[in-house]
Length: 194
Ligand SMILES: Cc1cc2nc3c(=O)[nH]c(=O)nc-3n(C[C@H](O)[C@H](O)[C@H](O)COP(=O)(O)O)c2cc1C
Image (cartoon, rainbow, N blue to C red; front, side, top):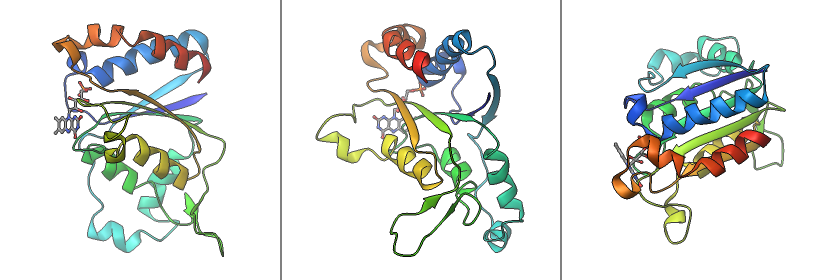
């Protein structure tokens, strides 16, 4: 089982709550899934689509499409990023802009208002954190993070989506390791069934 781990956080790993959750999750997941092979991609500084990229963008045999095709070769995906200004950090968005490619990862059908994703039978986990709490009203309407990832992954066909969202990441001013200890039950439960 090939798993792609996409991270977007320039913080040193040991002080990052989301990256610490990722390490714990992978440690637990590996215990249950000895055949898992992980590949890591740090997209914190992923380049934006350029003018040249856009000229080639709709070409299913072009350079941008190559990135999307390579992405499609994995069985499972783990995305890891904190909420930044209500959404994902721009490096994550820039990487996603290279994945959502017409006729490669999605298409449209007549009389269907929804895009039809072409990456089938895959699973995605989104490990994310925020300083505030966007899981409950009224702030859930401000969430362009957990819901954005759900929708953009569904756009390309990945509809088996699990968010591992830890709000109030800095609660108690604890070091990352200690804050993550408080979430171990959730992390263990998801690692067992994912
Ligand atoms: C540039 C920036 C923007 C942020 N925007 C938000 C935000 O919109 N809402 C929020 O609740 N927290 C926000 N935060 C706080 C982060 O979400 C929080 O520090 C992070 O999730 C902690 O996880 P980490 O240690 O893995 O980075 C922001 C932090 C930074 C650095």
